[in-house]
Image (cartoon, rainbow, N blue to C red; front, side, top):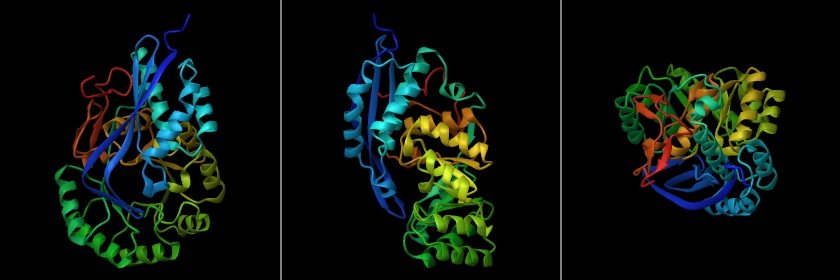
Length: 361
């Protein structure tokens, strides 16, 4: 006789959500979030939901490649006992190692179903450290006027910390944009995110120019390409601004290398990069090494963003929180999720799982 927690079916459907404006990073812009919705149903009828949010400019993963990866592993997962969530995650790591968003979606749906059965919020499952976070909001690549307008809108939202995408190819423009943002938001902490689009020498030049305008960012996130280890080490050891690894921190093995080489002071954990379980491993390594923690994401709906909020709030100790992408989406095909007031994200009302359901459920 099957256990009630046996995985009966896994269903994957496209989840295409238009953005209010294109989301631009150093590698390109995205006008539509071409994601996937995973529904996992247990033998007792409990359903869990997960989202895959591949971002081609970030790491080349696409909606089609994530779908193909999920279809590859689906026969091996259906019929398994959902309570064996770590062995299932290990199988995913072995079978689809480069499909981070697919692994994240399936692991999210699995853990959502399990914790729903237990009437346990995922923030409690992850450790119960808390249920509230304060997020930043991002200014994507664009013109000086667009940066000024975005900074004004962020302050009007009641959000204190501003993250700015840089590194799209014109350092002089980046400098102008940052000066304009500082004029609009003179007291806002600034996080600069290069998404691997810069060279270390150019980055140091930009920081020096900013210093002449009394602009000192609180964090410099992945200015150089993910495989430019020498560049990351150079910037991390320059001491000007704390450096966060994002593209360089795509796996637990890479985070071990960051620790060994002193390539960053902060690790940006994104569940979409390698899945939920590997993110737990990454957090453990970072904490053991004394590195600071950041939680972020790709271009994700309220579903995936709420999962990341549970992860960070439950584990605790995340100094930097970048869970803003639902504010960039023109549509919300879900109900539930974190409740947002200004920059505050609150999970206290969620009784089980991540608390997000598709509309019409």
